[in-house]
Each structure stands twice: as C-alpha cells, then as structure tokens.
Image (cartoon, rainbow, N blue to C red):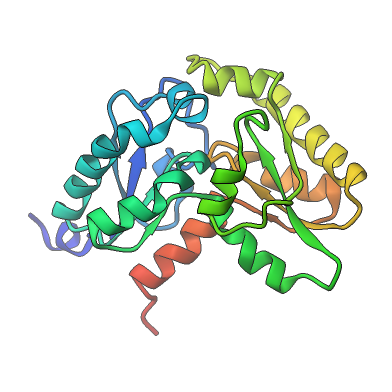
Length: 233
C-alpha cells in the first residue's frame, strides 16, 4: 500500500440500499457527491420499496451485519441511504457502538431551534402515505411537522420501483412543485427537510423556488463527517 493510500481512510460508512436506479451527482450513493472519502456497504435485499412501504425493523440484523463490516474496515460513524430508517436509529447505534445518523429527519429539532418564533421545519418525502408519526418520533421531530410527498410522480415511481432509468428533469419539476404546494398550504414553514436521500440533487432548485433554507441527508452527513474527521488547521 502506498503512502497516499494509507492516508485515505474513510471515517464515514454508508449503508447502501439494494438499488438499481441511477445514482446521479448529489445522490448519497454517488461517491463523487462528497468532498471527502466514504465507504459503502450494500444491505442485500433492502430495496427502496421494502424499506419505505414495508417494515425495516424486519431487516435490522442485515443492517447490523453490514454496519459491522464498515466498522471493521475503519469507519467510526455510520449513516444510511433512506430517511425511513429513522426507525432503526436506536437499535443500530446500540448494536454498532459508534455514532449513527440514520435519517435526515434527525435535523428537524435543530432546525426548529434556529427558526424565528412561529416558524417550523417541514418535510418533503418520497412517500407521504408511508411516513408515519413513528418515523418522526424516532427522529425526535414534532408529530405535527407539515409533510408533503411526491407519491404519484415519476420520481417516486423510479426510486421505489428501483427502475434503471430516471427522468431528472421531471423529478426536479415534481419535487419543486411539491415544495411550493407545501409552503402555500403552511405559511408558517420556515425551512424544508428532504427526507429522501435521492433528493439532494434538487435541493438548490427547491431553495430557489421557495426562498427557504433546504436541508437534506447531504447537510446532515457533511456535519456528521466533520466531527468524525475534523479539519486540521
């Protein structure tokens, strides 16, 4: 192993769902999205539909085993590639013994603390039908957090259907339209949180369309990794 290779030791391990859809730039599963090195481990059988529409607690052992592989390879913090995995937060951190950040939804309490009185964070999700109070509670988020989904659009169909093709332009249009609809319905919304880890490529468009701060798994993981591997000054 050369000296440069020895210096590149990813501290962040990412539990990757078992997917076939394109991982475009900005997606958590595209290593080029990150300004630091990461290590991935696929959780076999954990398809998007199984996690979002099903019960992810039934696959806890598979996530633990994949997390243990990442830790054995030097990772000191673990994250995941689906916001619905907030349901596994407590079990994973207990089983793995390292810091774990399962869901972008975990940012909601901090964001709410930053906002002016009367304002709150709202959630844009891949499936409003499937996002329950249990997911919010597991993330420490208020149960009355406003939520909207892209349930019936091409984006959700491509990701949840695990399709090999993704219409990026249609996805951007759907996600920004949903965000504007959410803000119109809830004028007290002061920031948006993208539940889906495949939505960060569209975060800038959402921010421009709504005029609000937009947080996602990208913002959470960037903060998380900064603690795992602090910058040297």
